Amino acid sequence: MNICVIGTGYVGLVTGAVLSDLGNNVFCVDNVESKIAMLRRGEMPIYEPGLDELVARNVRDGRLCFTGDLGQSVSRSSVVFICVGTPPLPSGEPDMTFIKEAALGIARSMNNYKVIVNKSTVPVGTGELVREIILSARRSDVDFDVVSNPEFLREGSAIQDTRNPDRIIIGASNKKAAERLSELYAPLDKPIQITDVVSAEVIKYASNAFLATKISFMNAIAELCDATGADVTEVADGMGRDIRIGAAFLHAGLGFGGSCFPKDTRALIQTAEQFGCPSDLLSSVVEINDTQTERFMNRLELSLNGFQDKTVGVLGLAFKPNTDDMRDAKSIEVVNRLISGGAQVRAYDPVASLKACEVLPEIKICESAYAAARGAHAIVVVTEWSEFIHLDLARIRAEMVGDLIFDGRNIFEPKDVVNHGFRYYGVGRGYHGRLSDLSPPVAPEKTVRPSGQINYVIEPIGRG
Image 1: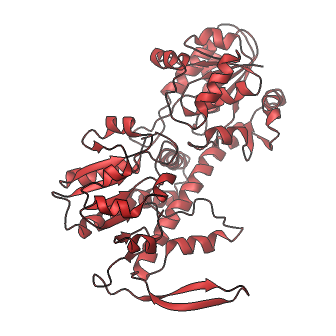
Image 2: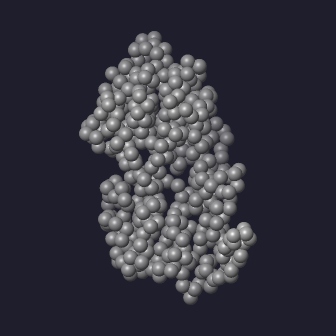
């Protein structure tokens, strides 16, 4: 099948590469000439594990090409994917400029029946908007259908998510369009749900907003854990074992960032208000997330007796591991708070350093986590890269002049950190350090005997 993919960002590039790997001929189109030139040289504009090899193989085999010629790509294809950006406006609504431009370009290039697929994350009613634009701008009476086919890929595992999805949602107005898209996805052998266009549009926003809600819920529970002496990681583990709840996204921390959850949750709030059903629940989800980093940084500032003339090492800059995406990254909030308070920031990220320099030019980018710790009064973990979990804590401590670790992603075991001479703060895990600093409660430590009985040993652990 000949496929046109409009947009070569995360969604478009991964979608085009995977569809070509399934044996289709794919034309990836972008109106940014420098990006097309980069892709033709085999250089990826984004970091995604395995993407460069996947692209190179399918370009070499002649199934994948990159072009700025939208007209030729549309006319030669039977299915056209719209994978352009919908960045948020100040109001929280998505900017539909690129969607409208893509629809107009498609309309002017159609020469026979096409299935137009909205794969960008778009508000309710976008399918009808695209249909109306094409109807009004097409140059001949050519038939077409508009389908909603939302993506559910995660940055850092986008290729695997595209090849092995939990489900494939196809929102179509007729059987002909649904069958053509089902045929395209048949090699994946995954569950396909065929529904109407509007329901498919809501499914995408509702899915992301629900996952965001789980994160904000755990951050609200984390605040309670800090107040009571409970450990939020134990609470999350106990909750996640309930099959009705599940363990995914029950992670307290600095909150959610990136290009999807913040934007999509706000967009759903806007949509609900437009249809006369405002959501206090979703507004609270956003409010909790917006204040999470502030609470964390307030505690750090208090522990350091202010940021002025302090050096802080920041570990992780990308909004999540296995990506270089800095969009709405929590590191931006952390660094800006430190800089405004008079601190010097030394930072390290395995892949996002170059993009971080564009967003945070005031910081010192270091070549390793150990270099970021050099001369630091405190270390702040912002992104949960796996290499940070395996750091040599004794070496980190030797590089520092202070002894504070603020773990914004709860990647460390507090006792391990304290045993290396640190004071430790997590999110919802309380304080762990010198007992002379605080008067923490005595908490039980549990071990499991072979018989399955629990043996409780009373031991002071410095949690409060």
